[in-house]
Length: 331
Image (cartoon, rainbow, N blue to C red; front, side, top):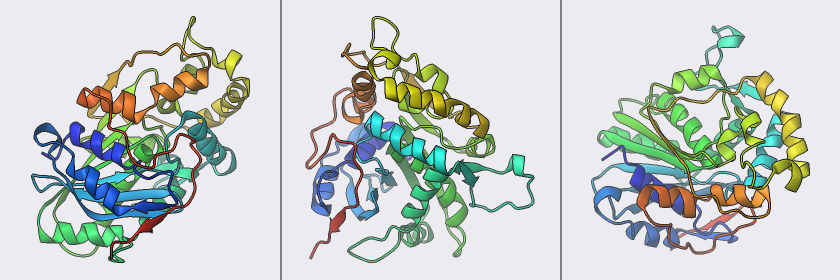
């Protein structure tokens, strides 16, 4: 079952295991993957590569009960908090803007037609490209190529928040790179939850060729960046919390970013399988609190897909502060 939002919700959520620990435990991932139920979620799943960490970017590969595989990303903002997400990507916008997407390189295209992604996402993708399994010393790309050479590979690529944007970029990267070391057979199935828009129209147009599932809570602020900042400013209408009144500094920052994002041409991908829904607002005092609750993978997106909140995970954080982490290597 390669197209599988139920499994993708588990796998994206489990990317947050141990995110607050200095050492990520591979055994924690293996234990929780085995708990994914059979049936619609294709469990149990088994850990077969990673988890690998590179300067805050974490990924792992798992195998489902039917023999299909998944690549799940956590991303640079470890718990997907809204304030950290906007701080991280806002810095990328201000300092670096858009850069060409190089997979494949297309120098013959006019500049206006070149696929581009944000510099911050490009940096995260570079970290993902450098990921190596700490137990085997095999790179992510080499491992996936070995699977695609041995048998037809169905691969879910998934993530939440900035990990979702990274899943999009990695899907396009893998589509270009997997065939470049011999004969392979593969199909990529991107699934994202609460992904922000971090690419231009040419990239979005190219990505439309994939069968793409994208879950978005219409009250979640993060998917409104960076193509829909005007809507973001009025996310929670009265009597809900006002961004301008309760989080003035963030409001001013978003106002400053809006013309920059518009000029850069951030463009949403039109997914083949959109899943737009409305979570129940919690009526908390501040805009940031409400936005954080609406962005939760555990209590919003996992709940929406699988009908119950995600299980509590070991070693998780709520700070949104990304930092490098080591991975424990099994003896």
